[in-house]
Length: 179
Image 1 (cartoon, rainbow, N blue to C red):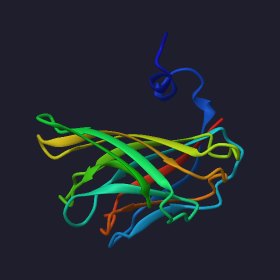
Image 2 (cartoon, rainbow, N blue to C red):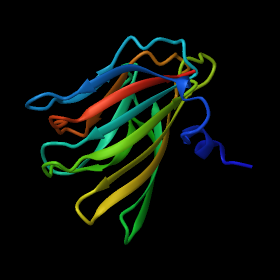
Image 3 (cartoon, one colour):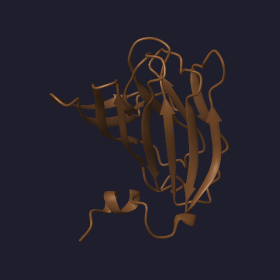
Image 4 (cartoon, helix red, strand yellow):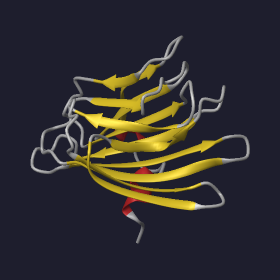
């Protein structure tokens, strides 16, 4: 029996179930955050795929939903860098960790896939899972993250940012709706 998470993210079956809703590519000078607003509620799930880096030292990608900046998030993070592993769990947070460490090194981008499950359901809290990774020319990091927003409101907006850093030029984020 296949594992549901692997089955849901596999490239098989009907790929027309994914519809591109919006893409943001960061322009010259970078920007503090990337947001998607007015997200339609006509899909079962959402997925964001990103390639990103920052303009300074390393930092983690963060996610807030619906402009919610209260201590209403929880997150779990498991990551490895080829020589060691680490884990983190936290509750009453102001965001969900949404990716591995991102570097300020020129032309070195991290990649991530963020799934927001049952985002339009108004009877359950919102669950997020993230697969992400970075390669720094022989070193790097892979991270698996899960998190929740303790709110039953439908998700209508997403905000991605990297700690207090700037998202660098050419970083790209695409939002998909999954039927």
